[in-house]
Every structure is written in structure tokens, then in C-alpha cells.
Length: 143
Length: 143
DNA sequence: TCATATATAGTGTATATACACATTATGAAC
DNA sequence: GTTCATAATGTGTATATACACTATATATGA
Image (cartoon, rainbow over the protein chains, first blue to last red):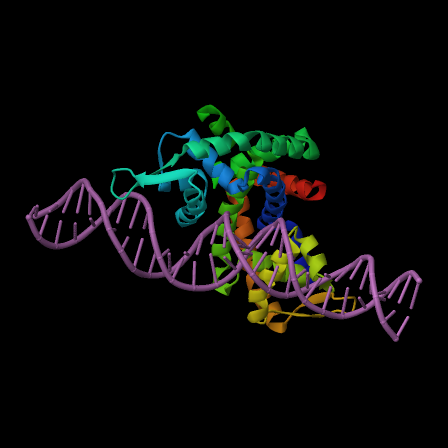
């Protein structure tokens, strides 16, 4: 059992992904703190800001996020008036929009995000950084 | 802004990691469901099972997890009596142990985990699978 | 011995995640 | 027009995550 368990720990893709995600998220979270948003919220704002009208379902798909999770994650942003959510016309569809305040916060967050990217890239080295980026893109494409 | 935001979305290492982690975690979660544990719990059980006495702080380090997060994550396992946590003697240190029930559940989960690994590996292809594994190991070593 | 420093764990609060199930708007068939 | 199917979103519940702060056991120094 002991050997098997150790083996599991060292080869589990899920575990390794989650571990890396925890560490990296903590870094980005610290970087974003001055503007008061989390990495997840930064991603939401940037994806919403980069699209012309996305419905909740589309947005969830873009983020590989369960729709119900997205719904919950939008709440703090709505409460703080960085985004607005409104009916879109097709069935029950709703679309998400960046408010002026949202644009402003996103603008403030951008350089902090760039810093975080730069620091991480430097720490990892360009090779691993690039490989990781392309691997993760592949994973998202394939799965 | 629109271009910048799109650029962010496509190059953010944190976003890509989180997206991949969500997808992969959902796969493993589904695989483990028959034995009633989550991927995180499976990892906890296997790491505890593979060590001779780990304190909470050590365990957190092994998992790149905040100690306070670990504390919370152990609760359901303790409640369901898959593990036990007891004082260890050094200052306030506590160690975690697998119970008989924990060993049993872990044994049942192992083949399900192997299936999940196999399916994911097949989907990704051996090349990407191997590269991803080594990249993630590097990330964990470096950061 | 007693006070203090240090190492360790716990709690309050907020966000993140997702499954199972519930709700509702609207297009289509009749 | 009414019914029904379908597409979309919402809610209940449970786990996962982490920061800021708190509590406590014990080793150490006076």
C-alpha cells in the first residue's frame, strides 16, 4: 500500500495540476491585491471586455467553467458594479457587460497582471514557460 | 481595450492552468464517484497512506496547499473516519493517519484512478501527457 | 521557576467549484 | 391559442481555497 500510494502521489495528473494551480494562483492573487480583485475575477473581466456580448452559457464555455459556477462567480462583480447582466432576447439568455468602473479596474489591473506574468516567466525560464503554455492550450483544445 | 483584453485571455498562465484544472478535476471526480470521494480527498488519502507520520504543516507542504486549507479539507475525511488526527508530541504538532476504513476506500479508489489516468493519457496522446507531467513537476520544483 | 519567544494549529470570512435539481421564457406543433 | 418541448438560467448543498487573525503548547533563557 505504501509504495502504491507514493506512486499515485507522484504520477497523478490531477494532483499535479491542482498543486501548480494553487501556487500560481497565489502569486497572481498577491499581484492583483492592490486593485482588489482576484485572478478569477480578472479573467472574467478581461474575457467580458474582449467580447461583444456573451451570454452566460457562452462565457462558461470560454472559461471551461460550469455554468452554475460562473453564475456564482459573477455575483461579487455585479455587487461591486464592475459588470452588469441583462436579458438578451433569446429565450432566457442573459448577457454580461463591463461597466465604466469595470473598464477602469481592468485597466488598473493590466500592468499588475503583466508583472505577474513576467515574474513567473522569469522564474520558470522561457523554455518551461512556453512549453507549459502550449501544453495547457492543447489540453483545453482536446478535452 | 478589446484587443488587450483578448490578448490577456489568451496568454494568462493562471487562467490556462485554472481552466485545465477544472476540466481534469471534473474527469477525475466523475471517475471517483463510485467510492464517494473527491480527487482532492483521494490525493490526501494517498499521500497520508504513503508516508510514515506526517504533521499537518508537512502535509500542506507536500501538497502545495495552504495549511489552513488542508485543515478544512481533512474535516470530511475525519468525519467519515477515513483518517484520524492526533497530537504528535512536538509543540502543538499533529499527525494524520489512515484508518482501516481509509485504507479500504483508498484500495477501492485506486483502479478508478488508474482508469482516469489512462483515459486522460489516451485523450491527450502520450507526447502531450508526458510533457505536461514533466512541466508541472518543474513548476512545482521551481516555484 | 517563571516569563517569553517560537512553532504549530484553529477560526472568521470571502471567494471558487460543481452536481443535482428547480425554474422559466419562448419557439413549435397541433 | 394551448400545450409541450427545449433552451437557458437559478438554487440547495457540499467541498476547496486562502488571507488575516487568534489560540495554544512547549522550548528556552533569565
